[in-house]
Image (cartoon, rainbow, N blue to C red; front, side, top):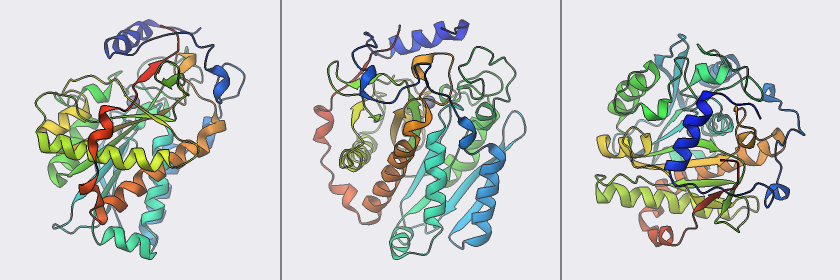
Length: 346
Ligand SMILES: [Zn+2]
């Protein structure tokens, strides 16, 4: 097992967030897993330069897309925002991905959505006539390149890290905004466009089941949990969760649990709901591209369906906001949604 000091800190975070731990053996046969048996091929994912090329190519081709640079990372990489629709009377949703650089498939899904929304199908037109869509792919561009001011020698793949170049967890920097990535997101995206909704896309460990005895989950979701969040903002966050849950559960490959997240405002799910009145949803997909913990790393065998899960999630929410059906979503399912159970090592 490859370990370093950060491991201890992270385990502490997981324990304090309410995750329970058991043995890995009971679930390891249920799905594709790293387990040292599979080569990690992260080069199949979009590198930073490939992502920028894709965004610029789509921007040149499509009238729907307006591409904006909203800031720079520690290592001076441009941060991109893809904007679709600019009708002030319409609700606005933000899809944010990869605050953690090793949580890659979320961005792959976002890039597929950029391409989808750039087509001129009736389906897309129906969405963009009724919703403004902001896609901020890969906030942590340096961590995703492994271009950071600390060593990744003890990572499984050595290519991606959760932290930004300064070793900071960007999703704990939403109050202080000491890092250029979070500062730019707040000043040039959140305060500027004031989204009504946001889905914050992440990845979690591989050994999460639905309750202690349930199946491995393809993801976990959670609404804001800070006690100060306005009740209407919270209700709309829960409605966002209903749409996502129904969309994913209707697919054969997907099942979701309730994520055991913390209440701090430093986390975007809570902080953005409080500061801007944005209705937020956290979506944690299964497995990571790289980590110093082997039980967090997922091989590429399930990449396709996990990316598709992200696309399904985004499309379903856009449709539900566009046709107004989200406003009728019954949020009582949250009361019975089974919680996550983590079977990895402590
Ligand atoms: Zn994350």
